[in-house]
Image 1 (tube, one colour):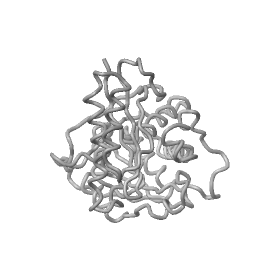
Image 2 (tube, one colour):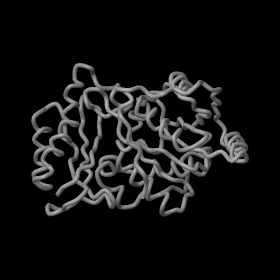
Image 3 (cartoon, one colour):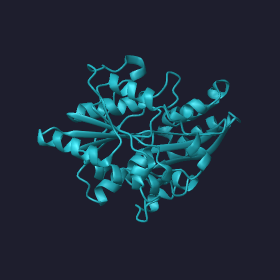
Image 4 (tube, helix red, strand yellow):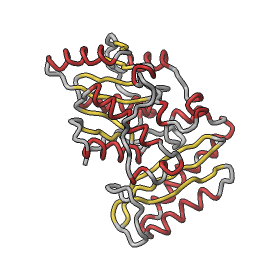
Amino acid sequence: MFRVITRRSSLALGYRKLPAVPISTISSIEELRQTLAIERASDRTIALVPTMGALHAGHLALVAAAREQADVVVVSIFVNPTQFGDKCDLDAYPRTLEDDLAKLHEHGVEYVFAPSTEEIYPHGKTEITVQAGMAASRFEGRSRPGHFDGVLTVVSKLLNIVEPDFACFGEKDAQQLHLVARLVADLDFATEIVPVATERDSDGLALSSRNARIDPARRKHALAIPRALVAASRSADLGVEPMLAAAQGVMQSDSKVKLDYLVAVDPETFRPVDENHSGAVRVLIAGVVDGVRLIDNTLISIP
């Protein structure tokens, strides 16, 4: 369905920073469309990196992937209210636009689209939305009702506004990536989705803007999540149930982590596999540490 870009960790190597170019921050949909029309008239391809800001090395991996794909990179920074079920969670989401712009400037990004909520939703929540379907009712969708409807609606708006040749999404949010790929395929968007491998900190924790909300003294408990995925990988030769049992055992060994779900799914359909499954599976995990909900996943082959 799409290609996956994998690279060695940016934390180990550091990305090759491009010569800094003037970065244009645009908040108007009409101005962005007019600006990108000029780029297209010069036969330049465009890649979009949708973000909610609070950028870290994981986001910069998406920027690097976008740079590999296209002549022009557009990064959107918009904290989308329609994908938050909890207003407190929305209010707590970090807004660090100045720092984000500095990082993007260093990585040669030409355009940042940073609209207001009123620019994206001028009449409040849109009457017409994208319904994410049955695949969104499981896992993250079960824990966060309506979340993926909000995600796919704003992604649809961004794809219509930017009309990119490519759009880069991280594999850490595997269910979101699956649904975005279905959105593009089912609704015939003329954009290629480029998945980018998960970036991890030196201790193995998947990079996320939410990590900053974990008390440093309690961060060690969050490491049970990536350790559980390692245990699953090491037990894959034994089959689906022993593989999941190994991961479950790691999670149960730390009482400070509250497990939400742990499941193996078919990477193509995102449906749970049965105990006799062989071939590729994606193991998904979600847990709460210090009041912060974290997700992670890994692709495993079962003989």
